[in-house]
Image: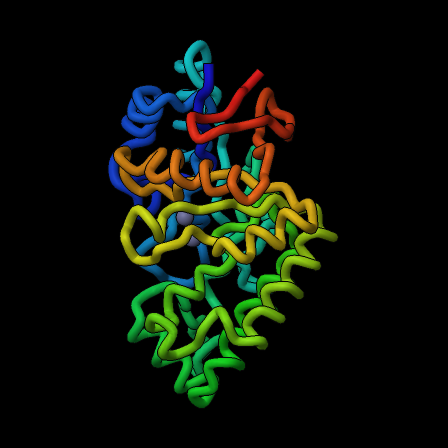
Length: 289
Ligand SMILES: [Zn+2]
Ligand SMILES: [Zn+2]
Protein backbone atom coordinates (compact mmCIF):
# COMPACT_ATOMS: atom_id res chain seq x y z
CA UNK A 1 0.00 0.00 0.00
CA UNK A 2 1.36 3.39 -0.96
CA UNK A 3 0.97 6.48 1.16
CA UNK A 4 2.16 10.07 1.38
CA UNK A 5 4.33 12.07 3.73
CA UNK A 6 4.38 15.82 4.33
CA UNK A 7 7.03 17.47 6.49
CA UNK A 8 6.36 21.10 5.57
CA UNK A 9 3.14 22.24 7.18
CA UNK A 10 1.74 25.18 9.10
CA UNK A 11 -1.14 25.35 11.58
CA UNK A 12 -2.62 28.00 13.87
CA UNK A 13 0.60 28.30 15.88
CA UNK A 14 1.89 30.48 13.03
CA UNK A 15 0.08 31.63 9.89
CA UNK A 16 -1.72 28.35 9.12
CA UNK A 17 -5.41 27.76 9.70
CA UNK A 18 -6.79 25.50 12.45
CA UNK A 19 -5.35 23.48 15.31
CA UNK A 20 -2.75 20.73 14.74
CA UNK A 21 -5.26 17.94 15.41
CA UNK A 22 -7.49 19.11 12.53
CA UNK A 23 -4.48 18.76 10.22
CA UNK A 24 -3.74 15.24 11.49
CA UNK A 25 -7.33 14.15 10.84
CA UNK A 26 -7.21 15.63 7.33
CA UNK A 27 -3.80 14.03 6.69
CA UNK A 28 -5.21 10.60 7.59
CA UNK A 29 -8.08 11.11 5.16
CA UNK A 30 -5.60 12.01 2.42
CA UNK A 31 -3.56 8.82 2.87
CA UNK A 32 -0.66 10.39 4.76
CA UNK A 33 1.32 8.02 7.00
CA UNK A 34 4.01 10.44 8.23
CA UNK A 35 3.33 14.07 9.08
CA UNK A 36 5.68 16.79 10.28
CA UNK A 37 4.67 20.13 11.72
CA UNK A 38 6.98 22.96 10.70
CA UNK A 39 5.61 26.21 12.10
CA UNK A 40 7.56 29.36 11.29
CA UNK A 41 10.10 29.72 14.08
CA UNK A 42 9.73 32.58 16.52
CA UNK A 43 11.85 35.56 15.44
CA UNK A 44 13.20 38.71 17.01
CA UNK A 45 11.74 40.61 14.06
CA UNK A 46 8.02 41.43 14.17
CA UNK A 47 6.07 39.68 11.37
CA UNK A 48 2.48 38.64 10.86
CA UNK A 49 3.39 35.04 10.10
CA UNK A 50 5.87 33.64 12.64
CA UNK A 51 5.07 31.80 15.87
CA UNK A 52 5.15 34.02 18.93
CA UNK A 53 7.96 33.12 21.35
CA UNK A 54 5.48 32.65 24.20
CA UNK A 55 3.60 29.99 22.19
CA UNK A 56 6.65 27.79 21.62
CA UNK A 57 6.24 25.65 24.73
CA UNK A 58 2.58 24.92 23.97
CA UNK A 59 3.45 24.03 20.38
CA UNK A 60 5.97 21.43 21.50
CA UNK A 61 3.64 20.01 24.16
CA UNK A 62 0.62 19.80 21.89
CA UNK A 63 2.48 17.95 19.16
CA UNK A 64 3.96 15.55 21.71
CA UNK A 65 0.46 14.81 22.93
CA UNK A 66 -0.75 14.15 19.36
CA UNK A 67 2.23 11.88 18.68
CA UNK A 68 1.05 9.56 21.44
CA UNK A 69 -2.64 9.85 20.76
CA UNK A 70 -2.31 8.96 17.06
CA UNK A 71 0.70 6.64 17.18
CA UNK A 72 -1.26 3.65 15.88
CA UNK A 73 -2.33 5.52 12.72
CA UNK A 74 0.34 8.04 11.77
CA UNK A 75 3.90 9.02 12.68
CA UNK A 76 4.08 12.64 13.74
CA UNK A 77 7.27 14.71 13.93
CA UNK A 78 7.99 18.07 15.47
CA UNK A 79 9.84 20.41 13.18
CA UNK A 80 10.16 24.07 12.46
CA UNK A 81 10.72 26.21 9.42
CA UNK A 82 13.63 28.25 10.70
CA UNK A 83 14.76 31.50 9.15
CA UNK A 84 18.38 32.41 8.63
CA UNK A 85 19.03 35.88 9.98
CA UNK A 86 22.69 35.73 10.96
CA UNK A 87 23.30 36.73 14.56
CA UNK A 88 19.57 36.62 15.31
CA UNK A 89 17.88 33.38 14.19
CA UNK A 90 19.42 30.26 12.68
CA UNK A 91 19.04 26.54 13.33
CA UNK A 92 21.84 26.58 15.90
CA UNK A 93 20.44 29.51 17.89
CA UNK A 94 20.09 28.43 21.54
CA UNK A 95 16.30 28.83 21.62
CA UNK A 96 15.92 26.61 18.54
CA UNK A 97 18.37 24.01 19.85
CA UNK A 98 16.60 23.91 23.20
CA UNK A 99 13.29 23.11 21.52
CA UNK A 100 14.64 19.59 20.83
CA UNK A 101 13.11 19.35 17.35
CA UNK A 102 13.00 16.17 15.30
CA UNK A 103 14.09 18.09 12.18
CA UNK A 104 14.48 21.58 10.76
CA UNK A 105 13.63 23.20 7.43
CA UNK A 106 15.85 26.18 6.67
CA UNK A 107 14.24 28.86 4.49
CA UNK A 108 15.39 32.25 3.34
CA UNK A 109 12.60 34.79 3.78
CA UNK A 110 14.89 37.75 4.52
CA UNK A 111 17.86 39.22 2.68
CA UNK A 112 19.95 42.08 4.10
CA UNK A 113 18.31 45.03 5.88
CA UNK A 114 16.89 48.49 5.29
CA UNK A 115 18.86 51.49 6.60
CA UNK A 116 16.90 51.40 9.90
CA UNK A 117 18.00 47.77 10.47
CA UNK A 118 14.68 46.13 9.49
CA UNK A 119 15.40 42.88 7.62
CA UNK A 120 14.06 42.92 4.06
CA UNK A 121 11.35 40.31 3.61
CA UNK A 122 11.74 38.99 0.07
CA UNK A 123 8.73 36.71 -0.06
CA UNK A 124 6.21 39.10 1.40
CA UNK A 125 4.28 41.29 -1.00
CA UNK A 126 5.73 42.37 -4.32
CA UNK A 127 5.60 46.05 -3.29
CA UNK A 128 7.85 45.34 -0.31
CA UNK A 129 10.16 43.43 -2.63
CA UNK A 130 10.36 46.43 -4.95
CA UNK A 131 10.99 48.79 -2.04
CA UNK A 132 13.96 46.73 -0.81
CA UNK A 133 15.25 46.39 -4.33
CA UNK A 134 15.27 50.17 -4.69
CA UNK A 135 16.40 51.16 -1.18
CA UNK A 136 18.99 48.46 -0.50
CA UNK A 137 20.21 47.54 -3.97
CA UNK A 138 19.67 50.75 -5.87
CA UNK A 139 17.34 48.91 -8.21
CA UNK A 140 20.01 46.37 -9.24
CA UNK A 141 17.93 43.20 -9.45
CA UNK A 142 20.90 41.01 -10.33
CA UNK A 143 22.69 42.05 -7.13
CA UNK A 144 19.56 41.48 -5.05
CA UNK A 145 18.90 37.98 -6.38
CA UNK A 146 22.59 37.11 -6.03
CA UNK A 147 22.39 38.11 -2.38
CA UNK A 148 19.40 35.78 -1.94
CA UNK A 149 21.40 32.80 -3.21
CA UNK A 150 24.53 33.91 -1.36
CA UNK A 151 22.56 33.94 1.85
CA UNK A 152 21.22 30.48 1.07
CA UNK A 153 24.78 29.23 0.65
CA UNK A 154 25.86 30.97 3.83
CA UNK A 155 23.08 29.15 5.71
CA UNK A 156 24.13 25.77 4.31
CA UNK A 157 27.76 26.42 5.19
CA UNK A 158 27.34 27.84 8.66
CA UNK A 159 24.08 26.55 10.14
CA UNK A 160 22.79 23.75 7.95
CA UNK A 161 19.19 22.60 8.43
CA UNK A 162 18.03 19.06 7.61
CA UNK A 163 15.94 20.33 4.70
CA UNK A 164 16.37 23.31 2.39
CA UNK A 165 12.97 25.01 2.02
CA UNK A 166 11.63 26.31 -1.34
CA UNK A 167 15.16 27.00 -2.62
CA UNK A 168 14.19 29.23 -5.58
CA UNK A 169 11.17 30.94 -4.06
CA UNK A 170 12.62 34.27 -5.14
CA UNK A 171 11.45 33.47 -8.69
CA UNK A 172 7.94 34.43 -7.58
CA UNK A 173 9.10 38.07 -7.75
CA UNK A 174 10.24 37.90 -11.38
CA UNK A 175 7.12 39.58 -12.85
CA UNK A 176 6.77 36.78 -15.39
CA UNK A 177 10.30 37.35 -16.64
CA UNK A 178 10.01 41.16 -16.91
CA UNK A 179 12.21 41.86 -13.88
CA UNK A 180 14.57 38.89 -14.27
CA UNK A 181 14.51 35.50 -15.89
CA UNK A 182 15.69 32.05 -14.91
CA UNK A 183 17.18 31.71 -18.37
CA UNK A 184 19.79 34.38 -17.79
CA UNK A 185 23.34 33.11 -17.33
CA UNK A 186 23.95 34.92 -14.06
CA UNK A 187 20.78 33.40 -12.53
CA UNK A 188 21.73 29.90 -13.58
CA UNK A 189 25.25 30.37 -12.20
CA UNK A 190 23.85 31.37 -8.81
CA UNK A 191 21.59 28.32 -8.72
CA UNK A 192 24.40 25.95 -9.76
CA UNK A 193 26.77 27.42 -7.17
CA UNK A 194 24.07 26.90 -4.55
CA UNK A 195 23.53 23.27 -5.59
CA UNK A 196 27.24 22.62 -5.28
CA UNK A 197 27.17 23.85 -1.69
CA UNK A 198 23.97 21.90 -1.04
CA UNK A 199 25.64 18.72 -2.24
CA UNK A 200 28.60 19.24 0.09
CA UNK A 201 26.37 20.05 3.04
CA UNK A 202 24.29 16.87 2.91
CA UNK A 203 21.04 18.84 3.04
CA UNK A 204 17.81 17.41 1.60
CA UNK A 205 16.20 19.67 -1.01
CA UNK A 206 12.42 19.78 -0.80
CA UNK A 207 10.17 19.85 -3.83
CA UNK A 208 7.54 22.29 -2.62
CA UNK A 209 4.17 22.30 -4.39
CA UNK A 210 2.70 25.47 -2.86
CA UNK A 211 3.35 27.81 -5.78
CA UNK A 212 1.58 25.39 -8.12
CA UNK A 213 -1.61 24.69 -6.17
CA UNK A 214 -1.91 28.39 -5.22
CA UNK A 215 -1.73 28.98 -9.00
CA UNK A 216 1.09 31.50 -8.64
CA UNK A 217 3.56 29.54 -10.80
CA UNK A 218 3.47 26.76 -13.40
CA UNK A 219 6.31 24.93 -11.65
CA UNK A 220 7.14 23.65 -8.18
CA UNK A 221 10.05 25.05 -6.18
CA UNK A 222 12.62 24.33 -7.48
CA UNK A 223 11.99 24.54 -11.23
CA UNK A 224 12.30 21.47 -13.43
CA UNK A 225 15.71 22.40 -14.91
CA UNK A 226 17.06 22.74 -11.35
CA UNK A 227 15.63 19.35 -10.40
CA UNK A 228 17.46 17.84 -13.36
CA UNK A 229 20.73 19.27 -11.99
CA UNK A 230 19.86 18.01 -8.50
CA UNK A 231 19.48 14.49 -9.88
CA UNK A 232 22.86 14.70 -11.62
CA UNK A 233 24.45 15.75 -8.33
CA UNK A 234 22.64 12.96 -6.48
CA UNK A 235 21.25 15.34 -3.85
CA UNK A 236 18.38 13.76 -1.88
CA UNK A 237 14.88 15.22 -2.33
CA UNK A 238 11.57 15.04 -0.50
CA UNK A 239 8.06 16.11 -1.55
CA UNK A 240 6.37 18.73 0.62
CA UNK A 241 3.17 20.81 0.40
CA UNK A 242 4.03 23.80 2.61
CA UNK A 243 0.37 23.45 3.60
CA UNK A 244 -1.35 26.22 5.54
CA UNK A 245 -4.82 24.65 5.34
CA UNK A 246 -5.98 21.01 5.81
CA UNK A 247 -7.07 20.87 2.15
CA UNK A 248 -3.50 21.52 1.00
CA UNK A 249 -1.66 18.66 2.73
CA UNK A 250 -1.17 16.54 -0.42
CA UNK A 251 -2.05 19.19 -3.03
CA UNK A 252 -0.40 18.53 -6.40
CA UNK A 253 1.54 15.56 -4.96
CA UNK A 254 0.49 13.07 -7.58
CA UNK A 255 1.42 15.40 -10.49
CA UNK A 256 4.72 16.40 -8.91
CA UNK A 257 5.69 12.82 -8.06
CA UNK A 258 4.95 11.91 -11.65
CA UNK A 259 7.15 14.77 -12.92
CA UNK A 260 9.98 13.67 -10.59
CA UNK A 261 9.71 10.11 -11.89
CA UNK A 262 9.82 11.44 -15.40
CA UNK A 263 13.04 13.34 -14.62
CA UNK A 264 14.51 10.10 -13.28
CA UNK A 265 14.23 10.32 -9.50
CA UNK A 266 13.70 6.93 -7.88
CA UNK A 267 13.47 7.71 -4.17
CA UNK A 268 12.42 10.34 -1.66
CA UNK A 269 14.30 10.84 1.58
CA UNK A 270 11.98 10.64 4.56
CA UNK A 271 12.17 10.68 8.33
CA UNK A 272 10.76 7.28 9.30
CA UNK A 273 11.03 5.61 12.70
CA UNK A 274 13.27 8.52 13.70
CA UNK A 275 15.79 7.78 10.94
CA UNK A 276 16.38 9.43 7.58
CA UNK A 277 15.91 6.84 4.85
CA UNK A 278 15.35 6.68 1.09
CA UNK A 279 12.17 5.03 -0.12
CA UNK A 280 10.80 4.45 -3.64
CA UNK A 281 7.70 6.26 -4.89
CA UNK A 282 5.32 6.53 -7.82
CA UNK A 283 2.57 9.05 -8.63
CA UNK A 284 0.37 7.04 -6.25
CA UNK A 285 2.60 7.64 -3.25
CA UNK A 286 5.62 6.29 -1.40
CA UNK A 287 6.39 2.70 -0.46
CA UNK A 288 6.99 3.10 3.25
CA UNK A 289 8.33 -0.11 4.84
ZN1 LIG B 1 8.69 29.51 3.74
ZN1 LIG C 1 6.36 27.17 4.96
